[in-house]
Each structure stands twice: as C-alpha cells, then as structure tokens.
Image 1 (cartoon, rainbow, N blue to C red):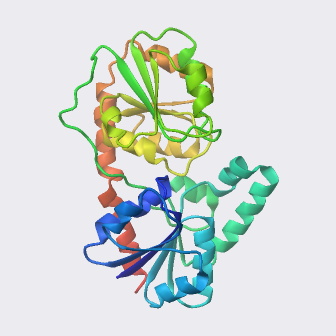
Image 2 (image 1 turned 90 degrees about the horizontal axis):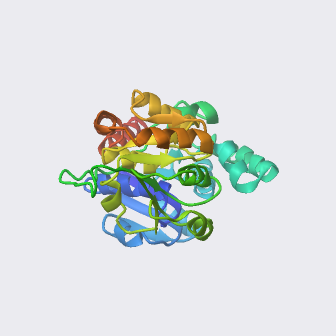
Image 3 (image 1 turned 30 degrees about the vertical axis):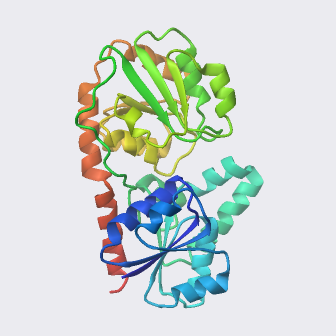
Length: 339
C-alpha cells in the first residue's frame, strides 16, 4: 500500500506520536510518506522509516500524492481540510482521518465558547467530506456523532521487568503531560499539598504555560517537578499510579503509557477516563474532579497496597492498548477500503 499521513507538525505531541507508531510498524511492507506543515523534534525519528515533506503548498502536496489509490490519512483541523479537498478533487479516493478529541468540548476550552463552537461546526463539516473519519475511543464516537468507527490509541511497551522502586514503603504517583488549563493540574496539586503526605511522592513530568507558576506554588520534598524529559519511563516505571484531573481528552496516551508500565490510575470523571475505568474493571480510582475527592484518595493511599490493581492494569494494556493492536485495526480498515 501507498500511505500518506498529513499532520500539522512533527512536534512531540499525542497525534503525531500515534502516526509515528503506525509508521514504525507499517514501514517494512508499505511505501509511506509524511506531509507536515511544520518541522519538529520528531523529524529525525520519522526519517528512519519514511519520506518526509515539510510544506504548505497545496499544489506540491497534490503532486506528492498523485496516485488515486493512495491512502491519505489526516490528523487535525487543517490536515483534515486538505484531505477533504483531496477527496473532492478526486486526487485520492481512500481518505481517512483520526479524530483525536471531543471536538466541540475541546475547541471551546481552547478558543472560548463562540469561536470554539464555530471551529467545531466547520471541523464536523470537513470530516463528513472524508470517507473514513475514525474516533480515537468509543466515548469520542458517541460524543462527536460523526461516524461509527473508533480505534483505540495504542502505545509502545516500556515495561521494565527489572524495575526497583526506590522506597517500597512509599506510594509513587506520576502526572505526565502538558501543564495548562485544559489539563487542570492545580486540582490534584492543591489536594496533595493540603496535608503532610509522609508515604506519598508525586512526580510532575511535563512543561507548559503554567509550569513556572505551579512549580513555584507547589514544589516540595514530596512534589517533584521534572519539566519535560527525554525518557519519562525511567520515572514511570518506579511509580504506582498515573494521575489526571483533566477537563477534556480524546483518549489519553499518558494514561495508556502508565498502564503499559504496570501502573494503576487516579482519574477525573470525564468520558474517556470513565471508558478506561470500565475497561479496567475498576482497577483504579475514578473520582469527581475537585481537590476534596483527590484528597480523599491520597489519604486512602497512605495505607494501601496497589499490587492487584497494578497487575490487572498491565493485563488490560496487553489486551487493548498495544501499538500492535492499534496498527492491526487500522491495517484491516485500510485493506477493506479497497474492496
């Protein structure tokens, strides 16, 4: 197959990492091209597996695709717009998009009520012009109401069989991701700081617009801000729970990475977190998104053995959220598009 992926940038963000995972697995037996509007830190990694074009020139992009049988798979608002034009122009007949978010909710949080609602309406119109819009979770499919397709995100396995916790008497928690308003980290940080946590350590891994303020307000012996680091799995593998108080997600890769390393979870009760909790047979904590509820869980963890929760979450990852599982489902859909 000839596969063309269109992305906004090659930055180290969730959607681009999903594309990189697909490219790694599919590059041996397929001709793969990446079209990106901007470069980014992942460009060298993509270069190992496929051809890359950094361009916004629509006529150059038409020339790159050329083959009507090529599968064109877009990720994000402007890539989707381009993909819709490609289909309308009959440059390619096999068009896919992965919808990585709850469209209207995400745009409103990002751009405000009115502009966000406008973007959501336009993006939905664009997606209906694409042959196969694929949601990243069942809950996203039900919320977006654009198509009946969903494929769960998958992540690589970074589980360390030889991992040793630095202190077996402590429970280690980790937050992974951008520090911004949508991710809402002040909720769990406020709860953690509320009282002394002798047996808990919280690692905050990531950067973002609120990093400096949060670090200044909350860093302590038990709350450790690392910034964005090259290999977060050296920290994840020594932890017990991955944590999120996010206001909105599509299907969070950070939580899946935690599950892959045998962590349980403490999550706010938004739809994708509820979906993970149900798939995990409640082997973690799903709570109201306020400091009081996070405080209650942190207090419980002071005398808690998470072994069974962690073991069962690792099993869930192996069954549902591996890269191989995600690639298999996309490949089957790609092949079926030719029939």
